[in-house]
Amino acid sequence: MNEVEELSRLDSKKLPALKSILFDDLHYKVLNNLYLEMGTGPVLYLLSPSYSVVNPTPNETMSDFINNNESLLDYVKEYIVQNLAVYSVLLEVNSYFVEANNYLVLARLRERDSGGRRYEIKFYTHSALELTTRYADKIYIGRDFIDLFHFKRKYMGVKDLIISVKDQYDVVLDKAEEKLNNPLEHKSFFQEIKEYVNELHSESLQILQSLPHYLDLKKLTGQDLIDINAQYRTINHYLIELRDEVAEFENLLRFKKEQDFVRYVTKYKKDLANIISYFNIKINGCIAQRIYNFKEKH
Image (tube, rainbow, N blue to C red; front, side, top):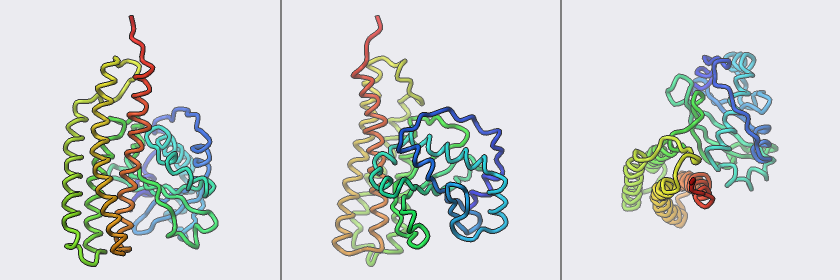
């Protein structure tokens, strides 16, 4: 874990200026109640919205980082929530749990060997009253990926999401070896899911190669919009097939009372469901709306 070290090397004045975004009430309240989690060495620190360290007791490195980088932390928080608003539906589809916890959201940063530039972020929500006493009971919301130097995402961020689905399946396999009572008993399910994952990965990346890196809906013709929408919908269908197979496996594990392992499969299914919702709302949903309102220029 090296997030503190990598972030401390960045100069906030050299980061791209943030565009002004009008947040809805959900994103605005989350911004004001956003906790950050970041590591230094083997220790993961939880920072409150005002950057006091909730847990554990900060060492000198952590204290100095906070004291010297408040403007950078402000930037990171705003950047995270802007990305949530534009490139995900994590808050929208989990709004019931977020609102029930008074909009408290935890953003756990994991630096991706990029010199402090790119991060995977896992999001959770929790009751403020039990944050320190029952930390393990936090609710997983989902994951996102940000690049602090490049807000605009190629293919609406879909490539990163598809690669993550494949990577996270490898994590599930590792956990199966560690947590399942008899991994070989479920060999057929693992094989089926692997085939779905590989098909999703190969077919999706091939489809993306044929699509524009960035969509400018105002400049595309009606037929272009229809074709692009169909291509993204095809990727979504692969995701749905995989999600359904994972859900069937999850149900079996619960029936078999494999409690130590099933939570990893549940989290994996959650990631898939989030991506499917992202397609339905932010990708296919937005393109379809543009198609319905399209008027040919004469």
